[in-house]
Image (tube, rainbow, N blue to C red):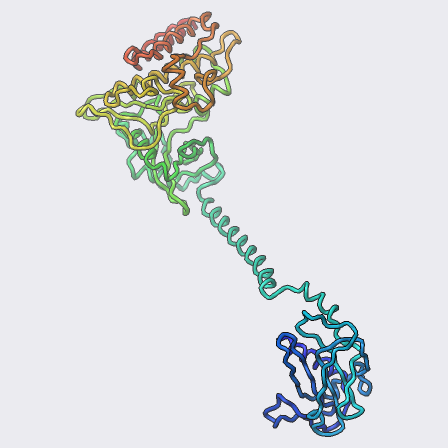
Length: 536
């Protein structure tokens, strides 16, 4: 309680100022072990305290020792002063043993202003040694108004605890986050390295064998990809170098395996169906082709926090056709070479190979310039087979993948947009691919540089729909208004561009059955390429 603390404080003060008496016995209310008696060479005293909160008056009996009194014969605290209010009084004596037993210092409220009514407790000290029952008001009393000010600025126990605990808690959180990030960084160092550290000669499997040689040796001509054990071994030895692309499925990294660049497509765990489907299609027997993106391996990797799904393919430094056409133009032979290589890859996908090592017919379903890679020799390879469907000849059915992805709206054929397409007829999917291929030809043709004249790169329908059109917007443009990308007039002055415009128009027919097949397009472009070669 507050009164007890005040008594203790006053005791400490008085212990330094009391006069000396040798062998004086005093009444002591807390000395039960010595028959309520204490011995001193200083003073006996009685203290009277008023507890403001309860109105109770308490008396305490104690001893003061000589060595604690300052100055010895004239204590400062015993000088008279009647200018302060008080609710705590001490009367001192040393004229006889147990003299303080009869001391009963009374509490008075002086007329001068002092303790306010709302104060729990305030006190002054009265000391005397001239007679029995003597007491004087102190020269240095406790002033309520002076003592109240610091109390208002003092923090409570809970406030003080909070002021200490909150900063400590924040520091602990920062340390925990730093340790977590450091641990993740340390774990990732084994996967992310500079290219210089990746040509370690102490590799374990098939040392001194390139990826191309390994694929040729292990596939035995089936074109179905590497055995699963070899795929996993390769995936565990690949080290990621830099990010080269991002998409809705995840991101694409450039990786290194024994000094060779590879592309690592990392799917998030929620895209497991797309990852599994694409890996499954890539490993179809006899699928491997120069104009289909080369598949190397598929594996799932646990990085300690979540599971990553890896799809490893050939790396092409030019990137996608979309990026390539944005950066540079092509000449007439380059345009034809690109168009012919894409049509050749598409014809291979669409073609069914019959035999014990046969290949089912496959439709891409998401053909666009972003899903076509440009190789170093200027030809192209078709990639991203996550939405592809296969035709089962035995049952004449189409195995449509079970995932939530749909094709790119800008490249959707009219029958896909208006939902009139026969999903049970495999040729419907091939015809939709041909429509998208015609739009890709238009993109390539715009960037063909003839005599220093070319158009800036644009996506199909850039002038009639926004950058991310909805199904309804594309349906209005393609199905209702029946608009097609405009052919620049300059194309009429170039025979190669004229031939390209005829091919793409035959790919855009609203009637899907009237469109050219991929094989027919391939042959037409092959003839165009041969004529250009003769001109050179």
